[in-house]
Structure formats: C-alpha cells, structure tokens
Length: 321
Image (cartoon, rainbow, N blue to C red; front, side, top):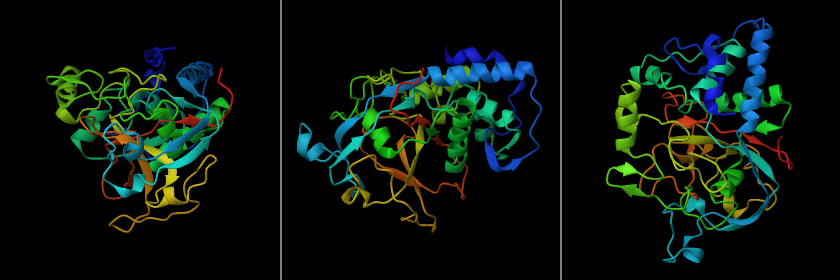
C-alpha cells in the first residue's frame, strides 16, 4: 500500500492546531472508536507492515572504515567516537523504509487522544502542512510511537539500535560511505540527484506554500532509496536511536546485537544525558555519512526537536507478512 493510501482515513484524525507533535505527558480519556475508526486503524496497520524492509543479519565491521578500507586510506570522520573499527554480529530484523511521516504521527496522536506539542513558532506550525514529510519528535515521543505501533500490530517494534541503522545504511555492512542509491552524493548544479539540496528544499517549500524555505523537509520518497530499499538515510532529519550515547562505546561494545550502554553515560554541555542520533538534518556534500555518530538530549529541553525524527524497527528474525 502506498503512503498516500491513508490520506482519506486521516481526515478525522488530524489535529493541526498550531502544533505537530505530542508532549508525551497529556493524555485525555481514551476515545471511543467506532467501526469506521477501527477500519481506518486496520488500514494504518497494513500500511506500516507494507513499508517494512527485511534486513538479513550478519557480521560487519562497524565504525569509520576509511583508514583500512577507504580508497585514500584516510578517516572519513574526524571525530574519535566512530572508532575503533570493531566486529558486530546482528540478528535479522526489519526496518521501516521511510521516516515516520506527519500524517502517520498525527493519526497516532488522535488515536491515543494525545494533545499536540504547543509551540509558538511559525516554522513549527508550518511543518504539519506537509503531511508526507517526516514528523519532528523528541526521543520519548519517538520511543512511545514505536511502542504503540508494536501494540497495534502485535509485532516487536522498537527504535533501531545504531548498529542496526549503520548495518542497513551500509547495505548489510558493506564499505559504503553515503547511504544513497550508489554510495555517493550526487548533485547536478543546484539540484540533487540522489539527495535533496537547499535548492530542492526551497523549491518544495514554495510549491507546498510554507514559509520553511531552505529548512523545509521533503517527502520520504523525494530521492531514490539505498539498495536495500530504505529511503532518506542521508538527511531529511536526524533519527533517534535506542542507544544511550557513549563516545567510547566502540572500544568495549559486545559483538552480538549491541544495544548501547545499559545506563546513561555522557552528558552534553548543559548537563543532560544524551541518546544517539544517526542520519543528518539536511543532506549535502560530506553530510549524513554512514559511520558518523551524533547525540542529543532525549527531551529536547532547550528547543523543539525541529530537525529530529523517527524510523522504527522490528526485532524479528523472520520477514513480516
């Protein structure tokens, strides 16, 4: 089922009252759902399942492989937290081919009778006017969304680990620098061929009638997928990972299905423990590389998570039907 197939069912579930996200803490009484609502939910479930990409597990060397396997034998990442290169063995799993869209996230909010995040910013409000672009959420909202999808589908949904994300971005652990269709970043003049440039984002904002300009996100299928069929891994919003961030984690990471530190380790300059982010806010040359790690406060306490989004995983070794 295509992503546009749920357009008709969201008419009664979209809450676009000047916000696009849940605060995660304001839940009203559970709404009554009629037969039509439940039919819409079933359509939503079928769409979610149809957008899963099965990733057969295996072994790979995780981290910055540039010095050992890059063409120029130089690091691709100047930061130390993507080193050392280390062996990881992953069980098979499935990963959503798209980042979660505003349309999908708004359906979730309404179904659970959650209030939206109230932010007095035109930039933020304009985000929901493009329903097929990625939803913007903090880590708690991302985690709750994936858990809810697990509840309604009966499948072991969760946020992906950063090992799962990198393995998929690198086409099952190959030495791929950029998570695009061919492993490179291709731009023709001002227009991106396999990524979205500032020119592309500006053009999309103008066509969509928003004020976002070069900061505009774009739809998930705006540019080609990687060879596994997964889109938007090079940009269009940082993706929250399940893992707590530890800059030294690679030096002592377990080989089998690493989950990140068991408890918070690293604090940002404001004194908050941080979670791992992968992908990139906006794509471009030398941005959104497969091995680069980021981190941020999971609650986004100082500013709205206007450049952070979510993609869910299913921790099942069998393909989802």
